[in-house]
Image (cartoon, rainbow, N blue to C red; front, side):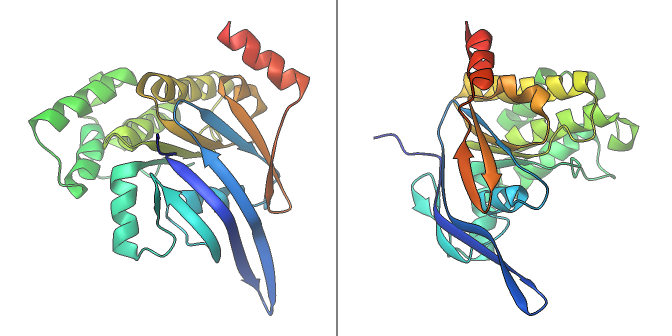
Length: 240
């Protein structure tokens, strides 16, 4: 039986607001399977980014199970979670979070180095990834010389460097125009389909939803699958 790359079971997350506890996520259940790009929508403060941070082992839940490739990592220590992130999860941040003093190719080398896997084979992989995102000609440029769209493409390549099973993207198109937004999400969708990966994207951008296989809406600490005719029609047109 094929393992589900990412599964959250009865996840609960509480934050302290002065003397009051605020429950952001309430007994939330969610799965991300291979070959699907999933979008999560919802208003600011609804818990979308909190959910993604928990899924990415950046934040610990206050209850429930975080299952990555069949292993419950909810109670892993920081070192164990860092290892999971390095090998199983590719995380694309809203602001790209590139290292400013490194050149483009060195951004990819860094994550391979941290995983102990920088060698001739992975050097070739870095070159191939930069080519796939259209930035082979920028490999030796510093990131401050790149446009916003180029930085996000580097961030995507970096997130894929260690060949993760799971791709998580937090508002990856928030600072981009519509053309660049489509370009970024198309790259993620292509990787999901061609390499059979699971991907989850938090977004406010309705214009990119046609690339997604499933769309969830976050409300009151829970996820609801959207099944509107408009979404169904979009998906049908895209896949036929």
